[in-house]
Image (cartoon, rainbow, N blue to C red):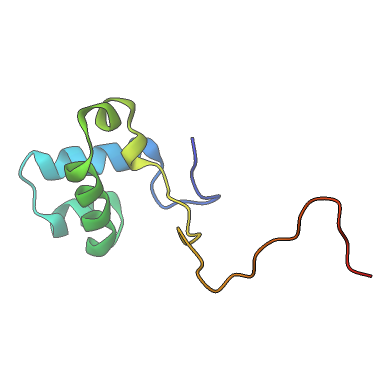
Length: 86
């Protein structure tokens, strides 16, 4: 499982948050109950709604995502293995 070092909500808290929203609670009220901002509640709720049945079953949609970009078009090509600049 990939979670930040000190997340405001762990996996169980995120799951409880999305279940609270699914039960009909407003986003603002669910955020207040779980001690996060409405924006954070909206992020986790959106990820839950857009997840597949398998991602929901395994809760993988509630894991943290990498902040690394998917592509870096200006990145220089890497050197072949075993070559060094001197």
